[in-house]
Length: 129
Image (cartoon, rainbow, N blue to C red; front, side):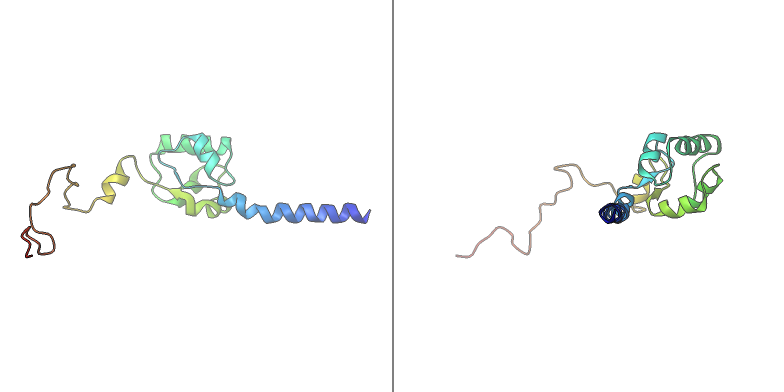
């Protein structure tokens, strides 16, 4: 009987020790563009039904503006929000690339464009031997 208790304790300890690893597998997800399958896969405590409710809410009410807006979805509570806050992204489609560009900045030149024919580090191409 003691062996069974020891084995059970060992298995329980192993399961508990692996729980933080499982939580670390959750990844960032953009609630404003992800489909229900992605939301269910990437966020802890959210299965297919809650993920579908999130997508339905977004379709009816428009994009989420803050992570706390997730609390407006039926079945999503503060605990689920707290578990996932670090992985919630709210970028709008196309906004991420536009937001990353600095105001007034020019796009990077294409290959071969914008190269100056100027000396590098003071070297003009003339050598003294």
